[in-house]
Image (cartoon, rainbow, N blue to C red; front, top):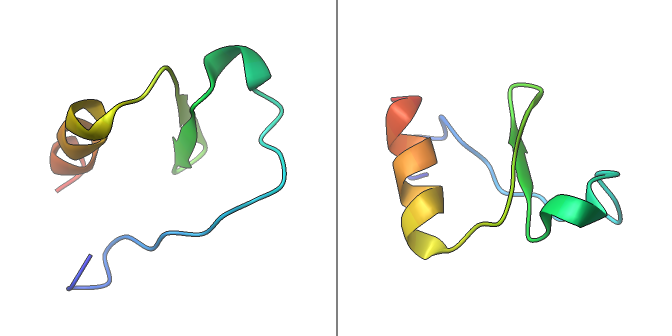
Length: 46
């Protein structure tokens, strides 16, 4: 994000293929993502 509270990094593997597409925030995994879900997850950490 612009305030650098969040950064985006690509990785080869999170070990969560069954959740793809997936992301991790603070050691918490989130899966079956779309743009709206990602927005909601990021907002929940703000």
